[in-house]
Length: 230
Image (cartoon, helix red, strand yellow):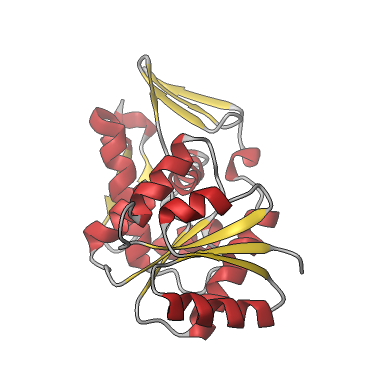
């Protein structure tokens, strides 16, 4: 195991505990006590960032947003005491791959780190199962470039949001339960809940604007893509 992890937290004791335990798991670990320091230390060899949300100076959300705008897609797991649905929406909207609430157990952190690293290393894009493009009216999904376009506007989606959209659009006749979506999108993450799916769907619909009705829910069953809606 040679994955390199960057821990970013302004609480030095948390950094030390995480560094010690992740190093024992065989990871190469670096620490930073602010987002500003982390941006200077972050290199292409880092496979994952464990990122605190509430820090002095730049917040974890702002750091994640900056990385994604700079086309840096290093996986991010947020570590935070903020665990409301709005907090989760914010975290996932800026590109988080997972979200762990404080206080947490070391075993949980290690398990999630392994799951995210495994998923990002071996995952097969859902889009490989279907044609390269799908056009419905002025909405176009490009499964090769991982882009959603509505009219003349490219809609910025996170990796997970696009994978959910691609999964639903790959079989419009099928209703995917939350369990189905978790098993396909987060197949190696044991701590993902049905609420996480709902948070992502809510954010995805919001970004789709007037086309949000393409994704519908059926109470007690799950979600589907309604190509006939347009």
